[in-house]
Length: 114
Length: 113
Image (cartoon, rainbow over all chains, first blue to last red; front, side, top):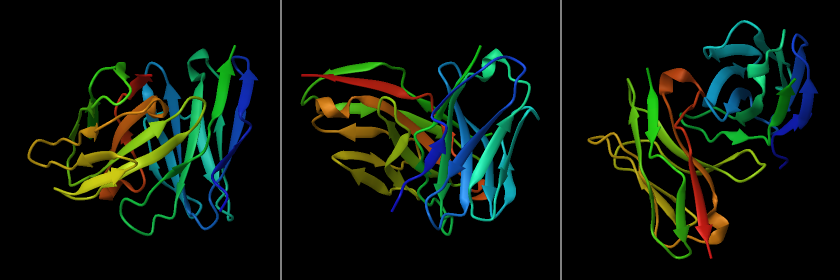
């Protein structure tokens, strides 16, 4: 079974631009979550999508948004990029049929904002 | 709100040494607890988990016991290997929060030959 894939793996943008990151979950998984990982703040939850609906949202500004498609693939978008948005963005998927289902993480997208 | 606190790192050990990484949590309900590991340049991998008090999770020689009375989930391994060098994250999820994970700060482990 193929794992979680994220594209692109690396991205360089400049302040003020916007960016879209993509995540393809494991086949059959309906839940996709996004996390931001930085040296200073650690791993922080961005949002979760389940069956195309945002089910949970972390404490990030409205510049961060996401969506999920009918095939469970998910995208996250960051508009008006700031230097502080430089981070590793991780996506995780789970079947979410049971409490505490294992979440499977992708390798991440490394975003650098110049 | 929920939070997870891990022992400060980094931790440096010699091969075959005993490992303990402390983890304590604060939660409003009855969370499930996890240990994830991140190798350089990779995403996170689930190492082990426990879903209720007194459960013991184990995998690849690592163990952790869910202690509700002390709100702890300490990670242990009897004999570490160089290949165990990685960053370890303790995390929790609440039943009311869907798939949301709350992570600790992470502990960098380096094992020297």
